[in-house]
Image (tube, rainbow, N blue to C red; front, side, top):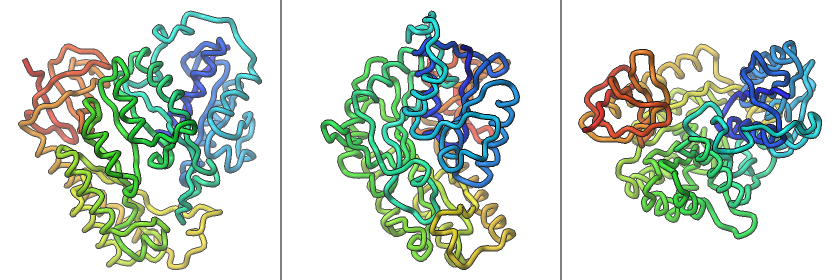
Length: 412
């Protein structure tokens, strides 16, 4: 059976899609371009109402083209919204097993050999280490769609990493819903132990940790990252708000001071660290002073990039019942101001990189031969005149800035 797998939403959704794709290939089915696929699997998102709308749109399009399966958060939240598709609920592992059972097993083929298998459309491999969350933030629907925190066995994660490296993906990103809660079910090993174990994998050029809560930046984890020869000096640490009252109503469990202290400790351990973040704008009860506090914390923490999320109420969450809704125009104006600040912070970060050296993982080679990709600290580079392919690592010297990229030249 020829199949295609797509995802919407976060890096965990991407990792889930990759797990489903692997299960179908292992069962003897053949990955194909979307327009040639007899079966399509759409791994959906339910973070916002807009994400659900886009998920329905993608599923409807796939179901008109042939047999379609719908998995992921939006399917777990409300499977009945997807007409014409077969909803498969539960975790990605359970969904993968059920889809394989419904399709049956196909003949084995060349791509059953991992070394011959094409990578899942990326030069970076996203490995899910845990699923679910016990935090119960007031705005978040994820505990409903993914359940309680549950860690994957370390042996399975390391096996997934070896598979991705054999496929030609030299960078691995550890991802999860609340990654700092990782504990190996067999040994109790934590995220720091996993970082050390993964760092010993043959052929691994770079490792990253995806979004991690400030309270999870333990001394042990920071020491493991600092000691690693392959860990990139970048952390995405969600802030959500810099105001004490808003943070309390969000049930985030930390203060702005706690956040700043966590970032300072991380920078002390990793001097070249680049920190990015998430912020929700227009949460119920956020007044002008609260928003100003958030802007100040972004500045004080030295953030280089803010992913701005205008608040979207989700039925079934505690925040949906909160009073003090923010006017749409005010929410949009604050989001624009925060994005402007993010742009300014990003420019300062890129300007500070000029004159430094880095290793750039090539993601794309453009028609004129210019390569683009990510440096070790997640800074985006363009490298004109480089002779390289996607997946290559280039030793570069940063010479200037071009838009939201740093310009680099290959070091002799």
